[in-house]
Length: 107
Image (cartoon, rainbow, N blue to C red; front, side, top):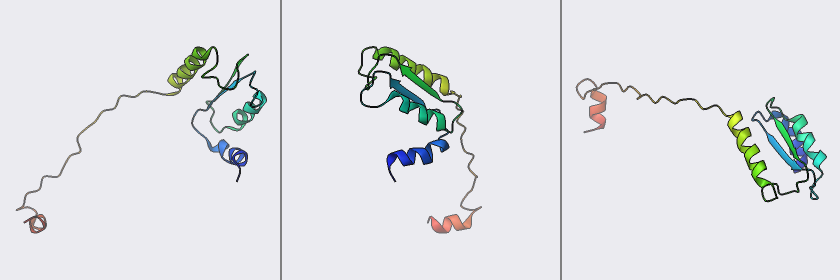
C-alpha cells in the first residue's frame, strides 16, 4: 500500500489533535494538498495553518520564530496537565509462619 493510500485509509482514525502547517510559496508541494488531511482527520480538535509567503521548510525559513511560537501555543492548548498523585501499593503482610508455602520456596 502506498503512503497516500494509507493516508486516505488511516487518517480518519487519528484521534490526536493534528496540526498541519504549510507555506503558501512552497514549490515542493501544493499548498491545497494540506487541506485534504485536515478534512479527513478523525479528530475534532485539528488545525491547518497556512503561512503566507513562506516556503517548504517552515522551521528554517525567514519568520521561523512565528511558526515555532504557533506550534508551541498549539501544543500547550492541546494538552491538559493533571497533577499526578503517586500512592504506594499496599502489600499484604505475610510472615513465614503465616505462609508455609513461602517459607518452603525461600529456605
